[in-house]
Image (cartoon, rainbow over all chains, first blue to last red; front, side, top):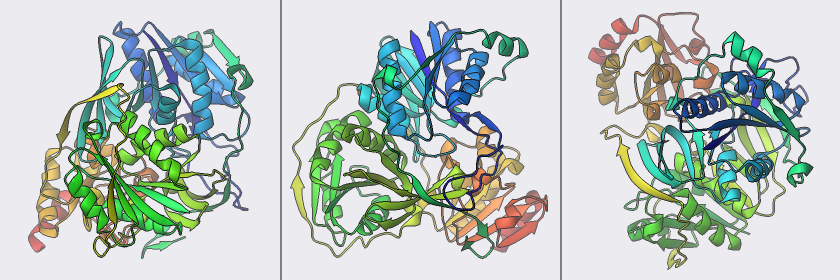
Length: 232
Length: 309
């Protein structure tokens, strides 16, 4: 079974992000970037499926500007077999990312696509579900446990008030929640090996997708809380 | 202009989150209808019809919608949405699960977790764990929105007399089925709706010590929450997590016990009206947002607090 894992390059979770002075966007100059924590859990789960003999190949895909190849390499160092970079410019929204991922799904025909439930920059929590709609695949969002049983996938989901278990036909989409697993650290030899793994680059045009204009945040402001409940 | 609000319910009763979503929908300035999708959910439809200011309630009552499977319900909502300009749902796990699927079926973007409606097409939403509030203007002809329930007051549950209409459309995608659920049974109020929340962090040291919070929670009528550190350490289940990637709460009183106050945790509780922090580390960042701080060992302070109540 082929598994596709989507990874996103985001600001490291330890960085306190601020809005630019003019409020046009957030200030990301010289901040540390990392793989989105939920995407890391997604990679770990895919690699564990391979180690368990369920998955035959794990492909890590990222959509974004050139530097996101670093995060693909991180996924390769964690155990993914090869990478795909869909190179785009500027900020793109979840629906466009989902359309690009659909193109990759059509190319690779994976039986399982694992994504993080949300990225810690945009906090949208949309891409996996949108990909599900576009590819007509079922979705197991906010997964805390997954199990392949024949041609079905059982997913335990974290929902308000408890846990829900659903059964999905394959191919299917899973988005990860915190308790799915605890990701490993990449070893130095594996980091070195990852540099030699195959990484293909596609443009949106290669995947037949036209990039639409995003909905710009027209202003951003820092949010805070001072004692007494003052917001601002 | 018209807005469709997706009801949050358990087939027998309407969940309060629906009322918060209705208030957000009112800010869009359009006529509001409500869609109830479920099985054996006629009572929910009648309850929704009593909400003040609703035009009509559409009830899709069929076994395929019983467990809110996203594959089926999204097809229904996308079909019904054809007659509306806006589709609004609360940003509960259910809304988060279904609505992006609806947006993609309609080929429009979704605006997630809206905390303020500026105008019919402009919204405020938190990004980067709430460090920044983005103002987003949507150019899509049809707007698909999830709203943060703590940011909007509940609409009046009584006083309306909307008409109730049945929706006969049956969408079974045949891709998914419900297996089972484990619902945490608790006499305490639900975390996101509780007027008082007491949360424990890594400082609680283990799951057993959360009992120290229970006695206080019982006396205050509080819900019990936890920081991600406490969840990651396996002290308590994930559905107790308050923070950026967990539940967002805004109670009248929030008591943070043994929680350092990482930005990801603050993102989930900083809109609380009064914040009390108990931590033995006087430099803990939680004290920067707390209205009242107690530098003390929680194992001394909690029993004292409980006996004083």
